[in-house]
Length: 390
Image (cartoon, rainbow, N blue to C red; front, side):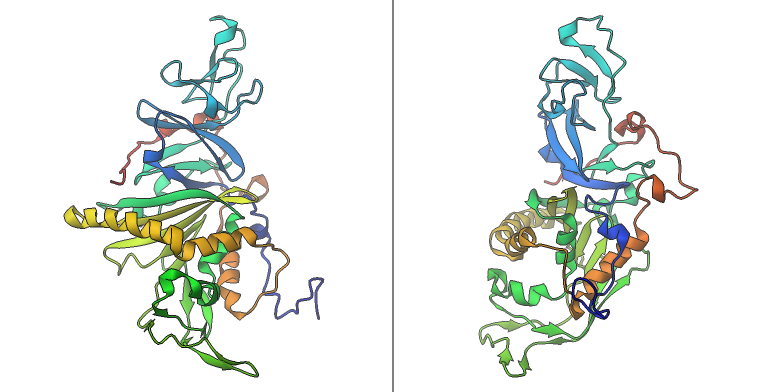
């Protein structure tokens, strides 16, 4: 029996309402938003899970406030640092305490302005760790930051390198592309980085298996077929006599909530592991963070930075990344028709549906802590440490 989209029950591999509803991402998580070195004296405007946020650095410390002055709606990221620990709206000089978000002065209404103390701007928990700035977006009391940071980022001697940019598309499409089993065997066959590789044509089965600690879900492949005969059509793919056939165990690919894709295995890859992190911005944009984490020291650490400088820029210009970026921006779903290799995608969707933290009051379990007012959730509640790459 076919549904309204024309798919049979076997083809319609399942829908998961919580995941389908997460157009703006999953709330109640810490999100990496930029490299620490990217935030200096000048404020930065970001959008995470649909929330417009302004980031400030004052006396070396990072603060995050809602990026809207309550007076006339001007972005506070356009503001000025007139006094230590404050930001003044560029329009009329409404001045807010960076820690609490409280209106402490209105410069164009004199020192005795009666509105002071009666207006607050929402603040967000923010911390620096592993050379990155992390912001908590949610309605529940935030968990410790370390609960949401992959352990590789906070290993001893960990160094983080990479780049970040806002791209067109929904974050879910980017995450699904990362774990997608079929596309790399066709789309990326034309990438310059695969010119010397004899890539397989298809895989006999794929599944998604949770890790032992329950934090990750890993893509597990069956046997690969280098080339095959297609009835009535011929042989595909065509041989590449110059190409080197890929042998050995395939690179491990794992996903983790809220938006991490890990390329490699930190238990066996002693030098570095790569991350593709797709932070939700709004319904039609996401922040792509392409990062590598290394635990090298001395000369090996310097070599890591040099290799990242070269390889990241090569990948950004000529590798898989531009092809993925372009196709994600063109994607138009729903509706969709799924096929066997999409078990990796539906496995990820199901995982999110079943394991994501409660989203809003309707999903809050009875044991959940009462949400703390946003003004009370500041970076002063926890010690800040940062390891800036390079």
